[in-house]
Image 1 (cartoon, one colour):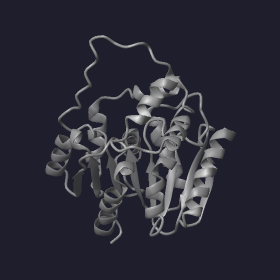
Image 2: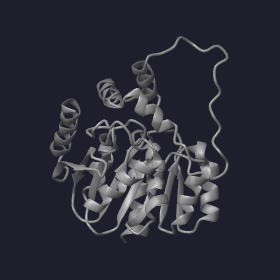
Image 3: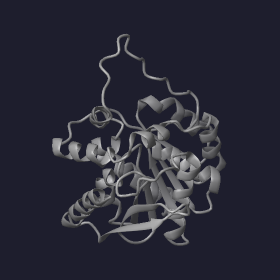
Image 4: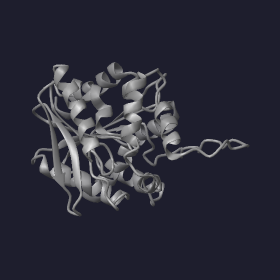
Length: 283
């Protein structure tokens, strides 16, 4: 825990040195007794950011810098991620959604813009499924399925599997594979180290989300709040169906980027989100 806190503090220091708004590490205890961490930066209307599988909140570093100039940004570390406690349980959609609900409740009475990336998309929709949209000004869902058609196609497995890799080796490959553009090696190593804080048992449970695809689709259609769906071409079919069938929805397909598209092309991503906010969330 101290190691994770040190990493979070280094990232905070970087934000401050870069001239961002005043930043603070914050913690709260969930209803099942787990200490969770988030970074709070800026003032005004609130954007809550939820990262993907095993990822720390500071992967949104560039977005924290950009959006905190105009709004209050809360970048969340889900349980067993970033600076949050590694809990013995709670790696299911219901508890993950409840964690988001408890975070939002402590941020004040005003509606928030909830932005989820990758597994954070599913965590955000789990929140909507259980708690509705009363506390939401809108949703930004980034590069994952939302249960629409067509269903994702599983990647083909090699005919001859290679040697069995350790958890650390798999994580190194996973992190490196998220980007279409080269990232600094020290930064990739730091990101991998942060991801390895999530134990293999918890990481596996997070990938096993025990609900049908309809769970996510029902959640996304249960709210009429403004929705921005930003994805790579892999999800273009789902984006087209969302745009056709769900009012108050905007979709953007980003080309030439990896899964962490907001790192690969932060200027375009941030511009798309800022325009959406000014147009439909807080004009």
